[in-house]
Image (cartoon, rainbow, N blue to C red; front, side, top):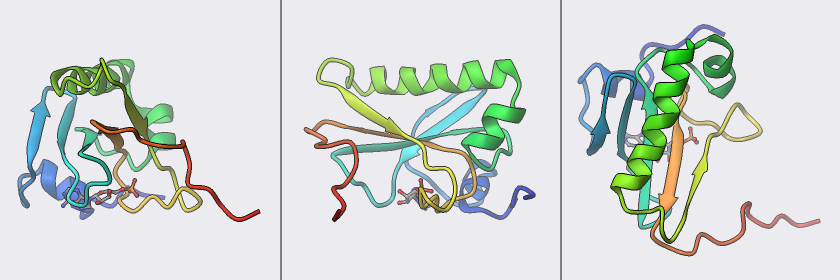
Length: 122
Ligand code: AMP
């Protein structure tokens, strides 16, 4: 599937719509999620046009991958989440209910985040 350059995170990267920026470097941009699920809920996105975790891990350069994941750790440290703990999450595709087709990692923190996944009826 081709990358959709009109997705909302591509527009944020191009500066066409605003975001609440918390961090930016050569490889990544981090901003607050518009619909936070925890007291801290930040999204970290690579600057390159990658649709998903699968696309990013298969096609991004080593420098992009290293730079991106280093940025995720940096953001968590800068938000002072490392002591109490935090969770990262990336949704890929339909079963994970990925909404925005630009690869992103969620960082959640500043609360007991509960079980890893919502409990489902058996
Ligand atoms: P996902 O289901 O992993 O694709 O999550 C997409 C996330 O993007 C959701 O948590 C949304 O609340 C968030 N989101 C959508 N639009 C925006 C926006 N304009 N600014 C910040 N976060 C957004």
